Every structure is written in C-alpha cells, then in structure tokens.
Amino acid sequence: MMRSKYTRPVRLGEQGEGGQQGASRLTTSAMIASLVAPGQRTKAAPFGQALVELAKSRPQILGLTADLAKYTDLHVFAKAYPDRFYQMGMAEQLLICTAAGMAREGFVPFATTYAVFAARRAYDFICLAIAEENLNVKIACALPGLTTGYGPSHQATEDIAIFRAMPKLTIVSSGFMTMRALEAIKMLQDSHIDVGVLHVPTIKPLDEATILEAASQSGRMVIVAENHTIIGGLGEAVAGLLLRSGVMPAAFRQIALPDEFLDAGALPTLHDRYGISAAAMARSIKGWQ
Amino acid sequence: PEWEGRDRFLLSVGHYAIALYAALIEAGFLPEDELETYGSDDSRLPMSGMASYTPGMEISGGSLGQGLALAVGHALALKRKKSDAFVYCLFSDGECGEGAIWEGASGAGHWRLDNLIGIVDVNNQQADGPSSEVTGLENLEERFAAFGWHPQRVDGNDVDALIVAFDAARALSEPRPRVIICDTKMAKGVPFLEERERSHFLRVEADEWQKAMSALDGGRNA
Image (cartoon, rainbow over all chains, first blue to last red):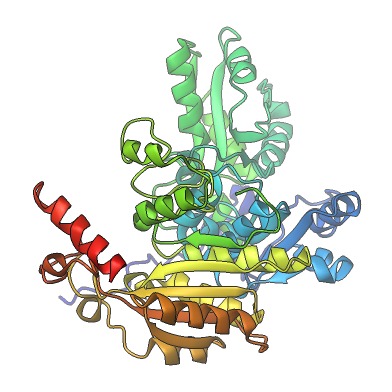
C-alpha cells in the first residue's frame, strides 16, 4: 500500500466550542482572529494607542516594524508620528539590529513583528545584539502562542521556551490566559469548585515570592495554564520553582498545548481542540477533582 | 570613545579584535601594556571583540553577519540626531554568505544611508577553506551596486590606496551608502607566513615571532 504524504487526520463532526458533539465546522479567512469572549468590552489597537500616548512625553521612543505595522497596531503610531516610524521591510534580522543600533545611540525603539519570527528567525540577533549588551529595546510580538489558525508557520507555540533561556531578557505576558482562566472559573461556579486565579505578569523574571505564597496554601492543587507548548514554558518554570523551594502542593497540573505542530483551522476550534478555550479549561479542571 | 561626535567603527568580524585593540592603543584609549592580557582570564581584551569589555569597541561582533544591519541602526539614528559622523562597518568576505548582510545592504540602500561606509575584507579565507570555494564571491561590486551602494575595489594591503578610497567615499555627494571592497593577503609583509598554506588559523612557531617582527620592521623602514 502506498503511504500517503498527507498525515493529517480527516475530522468530521468533531467537538465544537462548549463540547457539543456534531457542532458545525467553523471556517476562517483571517490570519488574526478575535480572542474576546462574547459581551467582553474591547478597545481597538490598544498597544498602538498606548504607544502613541507614551511617545507624547518621550521623544526618544521610535517605532519599527518588519512589514507588519497594520497587524501589530504600529500603524497607529506611524500615523501619529510618521517621522519616528521606520518600515524595515520583511527583514526581521535587520529589524532587530537596527533597533539595537538606535538604542546604542540613545533612542528607545519599539520593534514589532509576529512572535514566531522574533523567536525563530531573529533569535541570535536579539541575543547578541540586544540582550548581551543590555540595550533598552522593546520587542512587541503579535500572535503569541496559538493565536492564529494559519498553521505552524505562524503559530508561535514554543516562543516562551525559546526566549526563557536568554539572559537579561524580560518577558511580559500577554495576559490572554488570565482572561481565559477568569472565564473558566465563572463556568465552574455552579460546580462549587473553588478556584483562585493568580495572574503572572512577567514570565521572566518570575514573581517567585507571590507564586510560592499562593502555592503554599494547604490542600490546594496548582494548575498552570499557558498558551504555549507544555515544554519549556510557564508550567515548567513554576514546577521548577516549587521543587527548588520545597513547596509541595496537593497536586500539580498543566493546561498547555501538546508537543506537536498544531493544526490549521478556525481559532475557536483549535483552542477547544488543544484545551485552552475557557470551556475546555473548565472541563479539564472538573476532571481533576 | 564616548565622544558623541566620533565616527563609529563597527567590527562585525569580532575575530579581528586584536587589530582593533592595537588601533585603540594608538588612539590612546587603552594602555599599551594591557595588550599583554589579551585572551587571559578577566582581561578587557577578549579574543572576540565585545562592547561590554573594551572601551572603544562599539559592538559585540563575532556572531558573523550582524554588523552591517547594526550599522544601519547607527546610521539612521545619527541622521535623526543631525550628526555629521560616519558609521564604518568592517565585515569579511566569508560573512557575505550570511543573509543578514544582505538585509543590511538592502536596508542601507533603501534608506540612502550616505553616512555609512562598509569595508569588506576579501582575504579569501574562511574556516573551511578559500572563501571563493566555500561561499562563492563573484561580483561583490555589482552585488552592492545592485542594492543601491557606491562600490570601490582596492588593494586592501596598500595603505595609500585605502586612504584615497576612504577620502573618495567620504567626499561622495551621491545619497548612497558606500562600500570599499578590499582585496587583502593575510600575513602581508611577512613573506614566510604569506606563503604558508591554510592561513585562516595561522600557526606561528615560537622561534618565528622575532623573524616576523623583523620582516615587518624591515617593510616599515623601506
């Protein structure tokens, strides 16, 4: 029998959001899908607007992108400050090095791209040109973790694992999973499952004292939820911290993406499939009781 | 080395640090006797040039291919500051195999960085053999010209020719980045080393140092 080069399983009548069997298949045509829950208040281009506001009082701030201004909110900055905006083209290594050179000259560059390209394509450049020299460069990564249905070329499912081992780098969380966790615990209220949520604002450095204090409450399970592969992310960071500190919670669980190249498709479907939709998280937590 | 009005010299090929240390000593930024610590524990003069170690070392080179793209950042920033300073970036023929060199070349051409002067050391040596065989180095002038640069090609061991080329690069009125492609011979001026095969990593026996010094001094007096 000929072996097919197509290794993806055919999925029909699969589970949809909320776990109903036979939900209709979703279709996506956008690289960037909405992440908000129904009824949630949102603000357009929050990063771009915040940067414009910040740049008013800080003339040293510059904005750079590698052909992704529109998709990283930087077009808002470019419109407000056209002479402080640099379009570096589809060239992430140049983007990072240019930002580094500008930082050496006293500017504060904000460089934007997708998390996959920053993590995979520009790693050596961020490491040597920026981190080793402790330069003040901000790299804003759109599409962190699994936030697009575009497939593995755009899914940065190992971005934290790649970045965590880089010395001197500060990694700020997107806060996305905190939002999801808060939705999930609402769904658990009727089940009388008492879940507290601890937001981790920076993956690196970790606020170790706060995490240890929360994990030390007697009789509680620690669940680390992250929009990231189960390897090398926040879960392992917390597990290592607990072990090193001799803090043993009642149990330890991870909500994380599998160690796989993930499917292409509609984002709500993928989040449900891989366990990081609010409903899927609530299901997992119930199952661990 | 911290003077704002200085020209910036970016050593992309950090492996050449020892030559820049000698220049920094000549410039008075480092004491001459510190050269004795080169490559030693806790020295400010590591084998590969790093900005955090050495006064006057503008960047940490050594991860080959990064320098030219860094130079683009410096050149854009100096223009913002309305500075007259030039940015010089020395990189090697072998480095031209790195894609980032061409991202930098393309960006510099696009931004018409007339305050940027690239220097390519074409010594035809890299780790695995002659660069012309390992990477292929045809038409470097045409390649840079195609990216919007003003190229010159000189004998990189001829100091007078280099001075003329640098003066021409600085004086050029065209709004383009400039590149000086330097054909060089390693160990120039020391005939018995010039002829040694595989001189990318050059082994010099203990008794040869004095002979080499004498040959160089002889060349200087001639």
